[in-house]
Length: 83
Image (cartoon, rainbow, N blue to C red; front, top):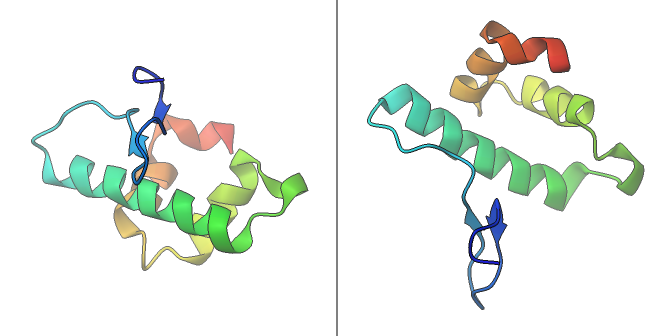
């Protein structure tokens, strides 16, 4: 639906509606990298049994140069404990 975290109600788009608005450049780039990384991981690497936070974290870690803002946030934030 329109007010879900992932809106797929439009024909040609998928809307990620999980981020707060921000004027902080690092936060914006981190959120953008998360969206790209998640889409690429699901498309190219994720196996049905491997759809876990830990597997996604490993993917980002392996590709830390591509997703540098996301990787930095994951390693420095309180969310590190979850993966």
